[in-house]
Length: 124
Image (cartoon, rainbow, N blue to C red; front, side, top):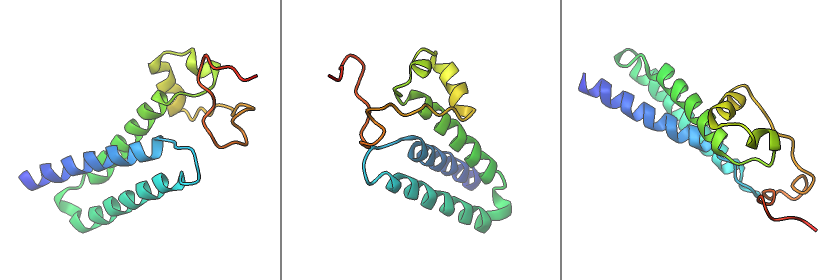
């Protein structure tokens, strides 16, 4: 029983780390590294689930649930240059992100690959 609890704890921690990896967006040429790291951990959890098998049958559902919740909650925290998104409360943004809301890129950030300017700084 103690081994099973430890397995589930590690599953939750790995789900959070992969959710953070998938939800965080970095600018630049190395954006794909976060996705690859998340996919590597995801594959390790899938392989471990097949190896452990019947001793801890809830690895898959727990991992997927924690991954989804972490990805959505972090995605709602990430600032976006979209007035519709910024005007909503946190829990409304959580609903928007969970439904697949994508904000349209602004003119200034479309081709540059950099984050859009912060509020209060105006382009001239």
